[in-house]
Length: 250
Image (cartoon, rainbow, N blue to C red):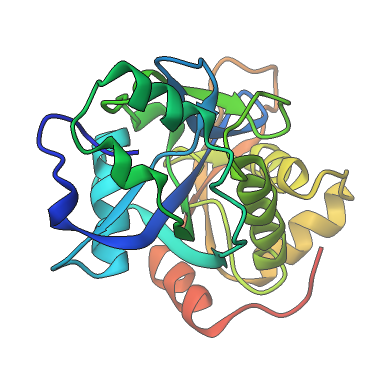
């Protein structure tokens, strides 16, 4: 999807698009940011097209900023979706063409190979913003069976699969948790992504062994006596772990 009024098909390359799976974590749930289309009420991932003077990464950054209001988002390219039939049943676009809502809509009827990016964001800082073709931009539980267009459900599932693999060799959390958090909150994040429970002692021992956490001299407010201590990420060590990788898996 793209923003309106300014869209001109001549500004973009034919046959190349991108779709962004934007993950957020809130109330113990892993969520994905979605767009609800105006005319069919189906859901789509935030996405767009590659400008003739853009890199794929720049296009993805543009889309992410337009939909979330955030800059400097952690993102990774994770897969190319090139099934020849992936866009042949795009009912949403056909409905838009029938309405005559935009003079360049036949551009969307072409076959598009889509490059998938996933992004990790702080749920509380996102300001969801719909695009020209949607009437809502909202969070959905990653496992919710909503009516997605094209292969967008498959794209979400693949992004989650890649995110799970990342837990085996890179840290996750800095982009999804608040600045200060408890060890149980960090464990809940990992369990939610993995879809299974983890042993509390083993998890804590492994996370501390990575040297990516700073334990703070304060406890979570509002809890019972001996409420859990708060932690923050050691950004220097966290970045080093992203670059060099971690050993072991969960």
